[in-house]
Image (cartoon, rainbow, N blue to C red; front, top):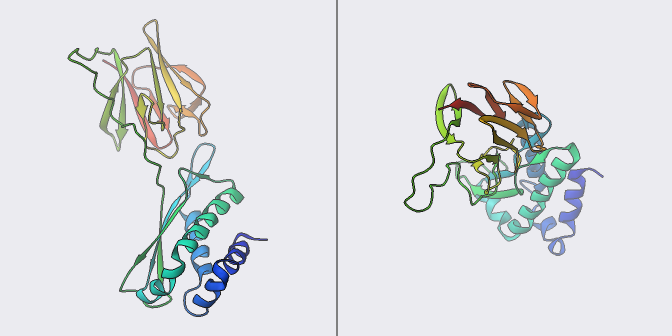
Length: 238
């Protein structure tokens, strides 16, 4: 049984047939589910070894259709979120966060018309993309090297490599937190060994690239560019 057929079967059994009565005419729930699957495919992001798809979908409805949906909106939203999960699982695609479907009203739409916006949205983390300042009045130790985030040829952030081991990833407790859907929770680490800096992949999903080549472990040289997902970090001596 296909995803859309399962979706319709689930709706038929909900709330003692209220869906059948509410959607006898006008915009049908299966149209929304079909559009979500289409937007999922159209907005997928291809990583090194995995495909990521949007997990948040905003459905914009006409005033008339939104009024008809109000009594069943919560249940419908839950079932459409299940469609997102099943659509990703069936194709072997990854979600960066839990599925979320929301409804909005657009007075400019006519009955039967609707829009759908798909987005990749990560769950909130307690960390920050900027290293936390050192506690107390003691000055922050000066590092001999740093990783610099480069976007469109410009330096946008710098992370001094002050510790002997610096972990990079999406996890909030990482030393360098990347809000990049292509980054694993604990993606890679940079170790300081006898004055050298060595980068190691930590079994990430999409791999770690240095100057465009996948690496397991490698000693970094001045100007090396590390790619994690879509994020580019340049290694610089100070």
